[in-house]
Length: 260
Image (cartoon, rainbow, N blue to C red):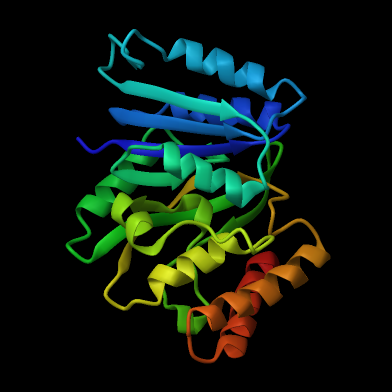
């Protein structure tokens, strides 16, 4: 059984965090490690983390539920950081899973983790991870549904980072998130390993993640413009041909999702 590490980064998100952790607890996958890096929140977020960690702490730091045989372990810190991507890098450094995913939103269904892990296991030797579809949520209202599909960087395609489950060796080979980017370090990170044609992602054509609306790269026109510039820069940095054309294609893909 492969261990899955879910990396959770928080700063004054008490209500959202409670939803995220509840969805993790509902998972039927047998071995999950939750790594939480909090940026020294002041709204009660650390109290939510403490209660969650206390529920899943045993003498050896791990709890197995008697009724299901599932194991959930928790590691967490609360300290100042240099922003979201710095916190994600800290969480990665703390994790020990065979498969790693950033989980700052809500997992849809109790088998979301199971489905993504299974897709990786069935994906063959070249498969380095898996991704799925997602919805953007404003409270209980679906703002947008994003059908990711499959494609190539040259087509302006990119998987949804919140849905991405990766083998540990991807981080070990390609490194973590570049904190010089303000809102597109996740995109640059994905460009880094997807530009290598030998790598492939399995795709689960189901909505497995409900994303809280208003994330770092989708919170207003200013952030979209910044994301455009940083996306272009990410492609240039990684030597991907025709970075401007690809960035324009990627922008139109996003606009089509809005129109849908």
